[in-house]
Image 1 (cartoon, rainbow, N blue to C red):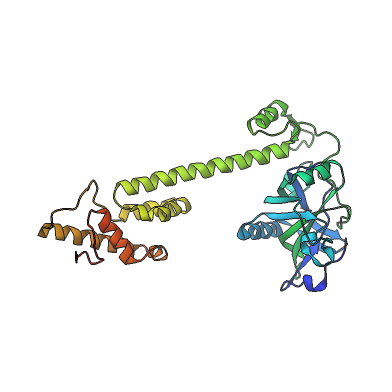
Image 2: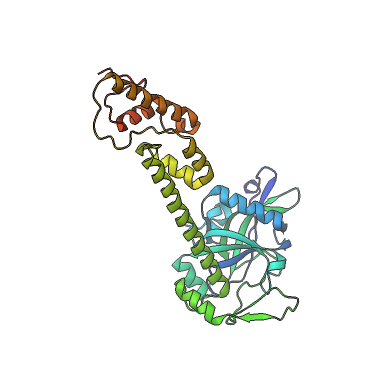
Length: 339
C-alpha cells in the first residue's frame, strides 16, 4: 500500500495513517476495523485502547454522517486516485463500537463497525476479488493513539503486520462462550438464534454477532419510537391546556424529546395563553378589552420566560398568535385593538 503524501498527513499535531485490517471471507455486516493494543503496520505503530475507542466514537457521533468505504482508498485522491477520478463507495459504516479484551471471548478485541455494503462490493467479496478492509485513521502524535476514523477501503494490500481474519472460512458453530472460570463452557443457542433471525428478517446464514447487532438496532428504533410517542403525548396535553399554540409545536416536540423533565417543568409553570373553547370574538365591551390585555400579558410572560423562543419567533409574532388563537383579530402586541 502506497504511503500517504506528506502534505496530506499534516493535521495539527495529528497524522493520518492508512492501515490494513481484517481478512473478509464474505460480506459480514459487522467487521473489525482496528485490533486492540499496540498495532504495528508498514505505515507506523499506533495504539487502539479504551481511551482511543471512546475518542473515535465521540468523533463519529459529532460528525453525524456515515463513514465511506471505497476501493483502494480512491477517495483520498492524489496517488490513490483512479484514472477516471471517481471513487465509488463499496459500503458505508453506519455505526461504531469497541470490544475490550475481557469481552472478546473467542473473537478479536478492537474497534468494530456495522457496515452496509453495496451490491457490487458484496459480489467482489463473495468472489474473493477483495479480502481486506483497510482503515484510514487519525493518530495523535504525542502518544500514537487513534482518535478518529477518516474512512476505510477494500484492498488486497493490508499494512497491519500479521493481520488476522475476522470471519472464519469454515461455517460458524451456533454456540457462544459465556463468561465463566471454565473457558470451555458454552451455551447451545441454535433454536433461539433461528427464531431471532426470522423475527429480524435476517438471512439463514447470519452469524450470532450479526443477529445481536440487528437486535440492538431494532431495540434502538423501538426506543426512539416510544420516545417520540411520549413526547407527542406531552405536547398534546400542553396544547389542550392552552399552554402552547400550534406555531410552538415543533419547538415543544424537540424539547420534550431532548429533555422530558425540562419540558414537564416548563409545562407546570407556563401560563395558559389560549382561551380554551372560544370560537368567536367576544363583544367589544370594557371587560372584553381587559380579556385581550390579559391574554397579551400572559403571552408576553410566557415568551420572556423561555429565552429559546427568540430563536424561533419574535415577541410581537408570539403575542399576535396568542391573541388570534384567543379569538381576537387585527391585534397588536400591547393587547389593544387599533382597527
